[in-house]
Image (cartoon, rainbow, N blue to C red):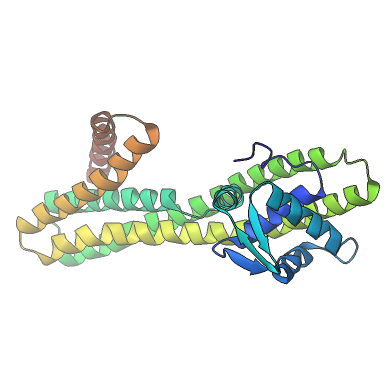
Amino acid sequence: MNPLSFEIQDLPDIIRIITLIRFRKQHTVKKGTVKAWIASVCTSHVCVDDPDIERALKEMAAEGLVLIQGDQISLTVQGTQLSKEWQKFFGKQEPVLELIAGLADGSVTALVVILSAFIGSLAHPMTSFAAFLTLAAVAITNFSSFFLGGITEDISDLLNLHTLIHYSVNDIPDKKERDKSLMLIKELFALLHSDIRRSNIFSALICGITTFLAGSLPIASYLSLPVPLGLIVSLSIVAAILGIFLVRYRAWRSKVNWRVTLLETSVIIGIAVIASLLLGSI
């Protein structure tokens, strides 16, 4: 990959970013479509001219990011990779963390509810009521945490990136081009701010719904099957979810042996469950 691909020094660099972000799953578009993408970011005060776009596309072709064949523009392999990298900068393409957090929290909540119901010999109606309230509370908490925390973190990162880009293009000697660049940056980040809000709502919904469903499955198994089969099956489901999704994921992300991660996770979950059961018995 061209080492200059991530540098932002002039107007064509900003046009390139907008083009690569907008490509997303499309690999071939017309020049008119690219010009429409740029026009959607422009304001009525300062807009990019067709020669500016043509210049940016020629530079992208020279860098090996796109192929231009007449009126058709297609991403190369290198361009596709860079497009994905820029999209990762500006949005959550794969909310893996939200899924993992939802599965883990829902499973641990179900574990506490099941053990509490079994130890306390609670009737099924009481267990169902307690499980619904507990899972709903945890799911709502996860939703609000990921939504508010995600927006705060992403906007902070976006502002830092905006400052860096703004600083880079502020030294463009040509005043007209500098004004166009600064205005494009302003409008681009305003658009990205809106996209981030939608992305965070989507991520928070995924986490909340996953939390509720991950907890509901083992609890439903416990309530629908006779003792002790229900207890065995439900605990097996919890162990499978935590082992596959939490332990393996943490081991992979942290580059630590999965046995070490398993021991750490078991200790943490054990302490949390024991503390919850003790507090529940008071």
